Amino acid sequence: IVITGASTLPKDEVDQMVQEAEANATSDKDKREKVDIKNQSESLCYQAEKQLQEIADKIEANDKEKCEKLIQKLKSDISSDNFDGMKNSSKELQDTLMQIGQKVYSNQTTASTSPTTETPEKNKKDDDTIIDADFSEK
Image 1 (tube, helix red, strand yellow):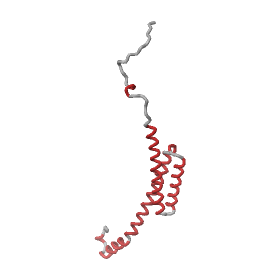
Image 2 (cartoon, helix red, strand yellow):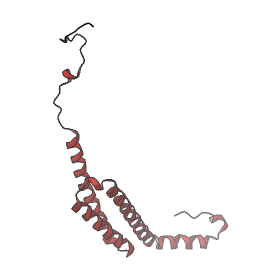
Image 3 (cartoon, helix red, strand yellow):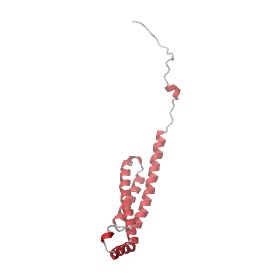
Image 4 (cartoon, helix red, strand yellow):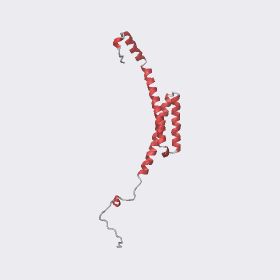
């Protein structure tokens, strides 16, 4: 613990400040953890809503509905300051988003890797190719 400006304070006040800081260290740590959990939960809600809007046409309706319910549950936990609920709801929402993302990604890779029927040799242009054609002069 660092006390700045200690040269202008009497030693007994500096010692008292250090003792108070040590005594409140655990409660400060708990408050910090709770604030971090709440901020992470709010951020996750925002990101999940944004992601759902971006991929709404690529996911199934039941997946979208499940995700929306989890977002509402997490928002409810945030508004009631239920920190254990926030942890659980955040984990569940993250897992669901990951599963949905995997489905979307696998659908995209399946669609983009369809086999082509032409070989690269047929796509090449040969200048030595002979073409039979009828020719007449006017």
